[in-house]
Length: 437
Image (cartoon, one colour):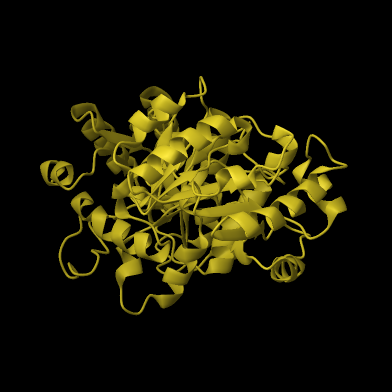
């Protein structure tokens, strides 16, 4: 089974215990195989077995063996193999244990969502959690409630079932950087393997379906969810270091600077500069020659996009040099910008980009100058919004295509942004708040 998993591209496995007996087996398997990690928990089905001596034994096992997580634990009102009051008490104990040991929690919740959230609120009032809602089967609204509490959401082969349209809608609503993949082996084998014993080698079937839902490549989903698993559980490898260029879908993005003339309230540049599994905090700004070497053959990609956690027009000369090389090699160029290029460089830069840039995308983010200053926090608050609008107008005259975008950030009038784009004679694209890339 482990060999088949490796051959399928599954490098690491988290194997949770669900009873006292299976916790010992999970620990033993992890000790035998470097790619297998263990979690220790008491499933609601086995909650009734946890008399005081057994609970003390479980606590000793947890403290001795240093698991990656507590779980799986939770509530199951579908089968009710343990009395509900007992389920809730054993669940609360494990929640408190996870907080005490600073471990993530793996939660099983079936037909018990309100009581599950009630236990989370009771144990950690108003607090956020590190953990995952395992084998998620709820609605998009319930998924958002889990995300608001800090949880990741994990999906199984159920999303491939023909009658699982509501679950696919929930999966589409969860940002990929808060998502995990699992099989829940030996159950829930995905289509086209229904009726067979499930196993970790089948994870790629789930990744394929999620890639379709999020309009990503399978490699994107694999990379992102692997990084998620490392960040949550410490499993596998961290990010591969700073990326000068990084691929998402069939576009190659160029990360030329982390400097920016904005300090947007929603930007993760300072706290978590990760985009779709790529780490973008630069140690040094790359030269144009280094960027060109990193790109390789630009015509392999749908487009070369200047976009990182920084404003690319702060390095206008490098951008122009690389863009000229890309165009000479038959590539297509896009710049994602906050529109402050004229302000930053002290001159109109759109004429200089003519012939080098096919598309410029400007982060409008508000149709109101006062609100823009409040949420984008520009270095020159009195001039930035007007400079951005002037840049959009100038770019429209010199470049083939201009797009303005806005986040559905709370309080932003996205319809006003759409109308402003129409008045400016440029395209408009809506972006999701809290989903980058």
